[in-house]
Image (cartoon, rainbow over all chains, first blue to last red; front, side, top):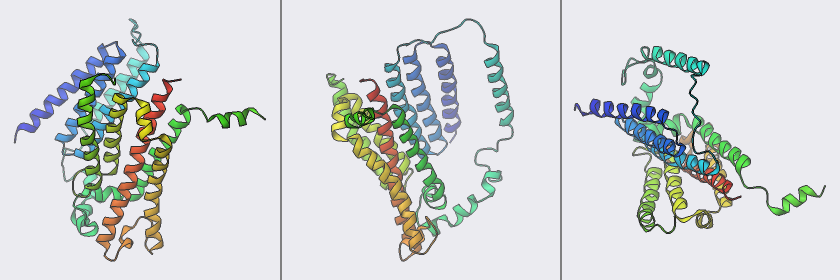
Length: 187
Length: 139
């Protein structure tokens, strides 16, 4: 019963260790691998928070696909080491400190995890839980909300992913077929 | 990495399981955690593992990027098409209750169709992004 806080604590400590390791490292390859590990720890954290579907996504995208994409990008670039400057850069430091202070200030306003009186639980969540299964006949409420109640949002998400893919293909994809290039050159 | 025996054998053992798990997450998403997005991502990560081990050419011979583009577009079409069908059956856009006699059966059919569309688009787009990155290195 009391194992959850221990696991949470361990995962969070390791997250901090990973973050500082990334800061200290200068080799890009090692950094990429540690980023992947960071995502894997996040996936574990999501799992502890009873969100296995988010954990799936984090494990597959965060530590799988995006690590591989970063490795491919590294193999295309020539520099393998970050340039370290000894001088402290004050303006970025100020921005980071201000953002961090604002985020820490925001923590005390967050509702406790699983708090039924939290504003987020007051609106429509009640109805989803009380009548979701009768209305959709689907035992997994997350799927019912995502695909049915919020179907229009999910359609938007799919179109966003599709558009992102088209954008990347236009930017990085292979040049046109030979016939097309010749057509372009003739006029 | 084709010559590395250990990598090749482990990948051969793992890839079928990853793809089977992706299909499970896809089609069991209404009973257990998961759904189209997770399934697409897991499927594509399994296939990216295949590409890393056996090379881009072998992978493109199995799933050409032209086919992936069609699958990605079809996914969006299946999703929006499900919505349009329920519109023509007399209810609102994406109100799946119109798809069958009883509303819950209609909801079930609609959710499965929609998740299928999401899975197709996400899986295909992830692989296409990887193809686009990997092909840059060969010019």
